[in-house]
Image 1 (tube, rainbow, N blue to C red):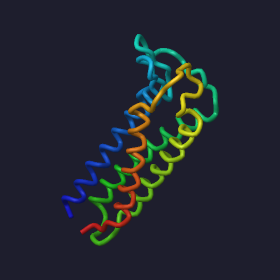
Image 2 (cartoon, rainbow, N blue to C red; image 1 turned 60 degrees about the vertical axis):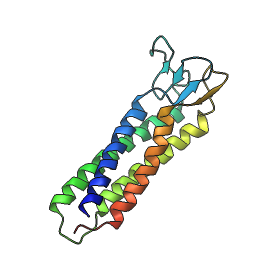
Image 3 (cartoon, helix red, strand yellow; image 1 turned 30 degrees about the horizontal axis):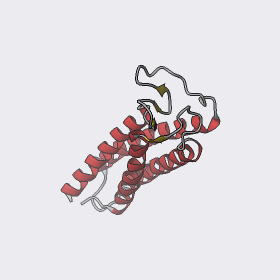
Length: 160
């Protein structure tokens, strides 16, 4: 049981780190023709990363930014609650609060990435004729899977 809890804890920390990286890095859509990419915050070229997004004032992008920040916040809260419950909870109880908070994180990731996929994943708003998904976009979908698995495991596990 201790090994399982330690493994979940490590995967949870990895998920938090990947959420930070995927939200901060500006590599959600990458141009096929050169070394240019677009993220949630800036438009980057091979020279610099100081270009503003052409669609920066759209509500959909602001919603994606907000949901990704909320997912980071809920993931960190879930991690802190899990550590707190690990040392204060009585034996035999389940990690309901940690699991519920992680599932809220999962929901925020799902909503944010779904909005981004619907509005911007095909290179909309960029000057790229051909583009593909960057590592930030892929990392976010990986975090989506991990957060769901962690949330369900927290709900199922009992402290022994």
